[in-house]
Image 1 (spheres, rainbow, N blue to C red):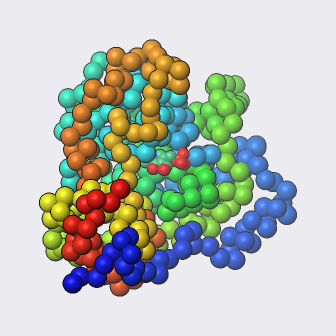
Image 2: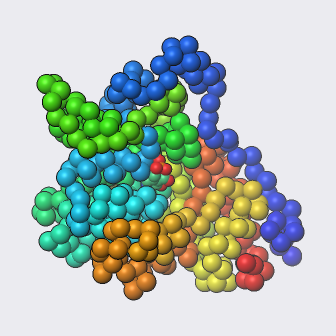
Image 3: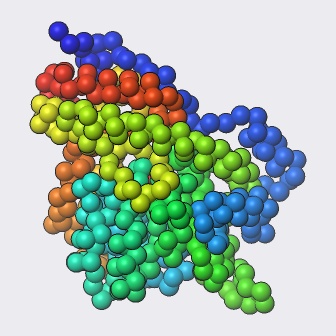
Length: 411
Ligand SMILES: Cc1ncc(COP(=O)(O)O)c(C=O)c1O
């Protein structure tokens, strides 16, 4: 008789999961120094830690400029504003991402147009992309989801052909490289999040990358209440306060010195996990294109074939793994079925004005819908351990498989 699942009263596997965020006395010292300096805030923008962190981050990601700011949502709003995108313009976003990717266009009065995902990478489907471009399309926000990078060659080619702005949503892609060039340096802008769960964090925080001096100047202005940043100090924008604090930036400077070493460990373990799962009945991990020359690694996404697991869904699968002690979940639902994006006349001026283009109920994204029923997302800290942790994860999946019939009625 196979061992009972912990979810149903059995003994859990109880692996030791590395804690996140990783921190030591260097973070403590950095914060003490900010306290002693008395320079807590981000004004005048950029403040010293914010400027240093941005310069180091830009260099690591092969971008000419970087702007530290408050979070990885306002980064996209700022990039859209800097590119002049606004009322009624269409911005293409993938069907699987966090709600912020679709919220950002709406925050500037633009309409998010959802595009289905690629069935192997779960990132924006570059083939479907071209078919939804209209004469109102102004930008694309591809998301480098989980632990890979979207097909930047194909996306950039479509963008160039149709003269569209590309904002790479790199909230999951710190340290990643596509064909040896950093995530966030391919599009007109890159948008990074430093929220607590991310692979580089200050609790909250964000950063914009760009290779364009004027865009960089405009972004600095937009996040600093519109203050002029040009040499003559004459050009105002309509901005607001989205500055980062010096406490956050000081933490990020320390975290950045660890990022690539941590990423190498994660990437090695994720690669090992891919090999194990590709040889495990009913499992198919997110495909990583060989053009990803340095793998990012936020969430490890793996698909399962429900028919190999007695038809259980991702909720049941993830609940069983969590009970065994693994930090995972079902991931985000498709954008048009997302509880964080319930659009009404009352809560969205964009919906009120453009509801013909935002009728989520009538939309259908088959690849995203299937993925959301059959993928589990594992937190990146699990891959900061050794390969033995990956082995016990595979063991847990096997435990779920042999017990999957007993999960069918679990709600
Ligand atoms: C893909 C994606 N984009 C944007 C964001 C927003 O970042 P923040 O929470 O820093 O605003 C997140 C955060 O989870 C995300 O996962």
